[in-house]
Image 1 (cartoon, rainbow, N blue to C red):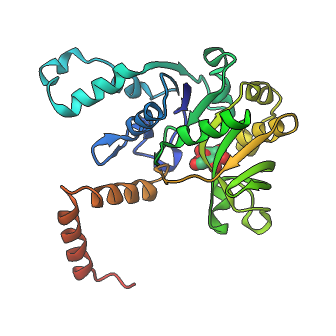
Image 2 (image 1 turned 90 degrees about the vertical axis):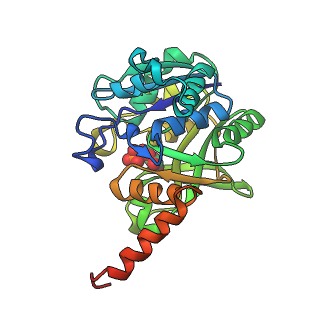
Image 3 (image 1 turned 45 degrees about the vertical axis):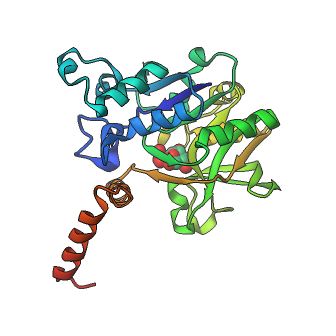
Length: 286
Ligand code: G1P
């Protein structure tokens, strides 16, 4: 399976931390976020990954590359597991020249992908799912011979952060998409089913991207392209088993770090002690 990972976004919600380094390289506990995403794609069956990068994103390529100056540390288990990961998959990179939107970034993959179905995972989102999320989507795509997107129910005040889907439920948790809207107003949203950023597409998505005019923020939105795709092809949306961690802004990143540390046997006790003492001394009014 080929997988495309768009990682060209500027990380505006993280400035100044992401002014000169990719948000995808921010660490969650012991690894940069992009490593979790690549691990997830490989666990889902990816043998070929194309990462769409851009300005200030060179650190992503360096991360998965051999670094001669670190050879003497090569036996460290942390570096060995990264080396093994990089060897298990064919990694490719293309730069998006200008930030023109998520659909534009996916469109850049056209020649690389060719005429096969392919997966898309966002470079700033960690999915902890069993089976791995793209594996779940791929199975549905194969069965129904159609594109599939992952969705989850989001609180109504959060719909303005998501692509939103309406559709007919054809099986429990599986919807045939009808209307898709990028970041609607909570007051008028037709649904609370939010697009979580994992997709399996038929190559028809590239023709739909070609026909998609710039939308929200003047960018070519993937949600708008999927809306056009539904006019000629079935597109399914599915809920999934597992948890998604979006690290796209400071609080979400902090929260993800805390949760991962709390679930790790080495850090759990120490983290709990710190939190308890912080709360005890906390004089900030509630
Ligand atoms: C992007 C997509 C949106 C999706 C979201 C998931 O938005 O445009 O449809 O719901 O990812 O995180 P972004 O978060 O990049 O603004």
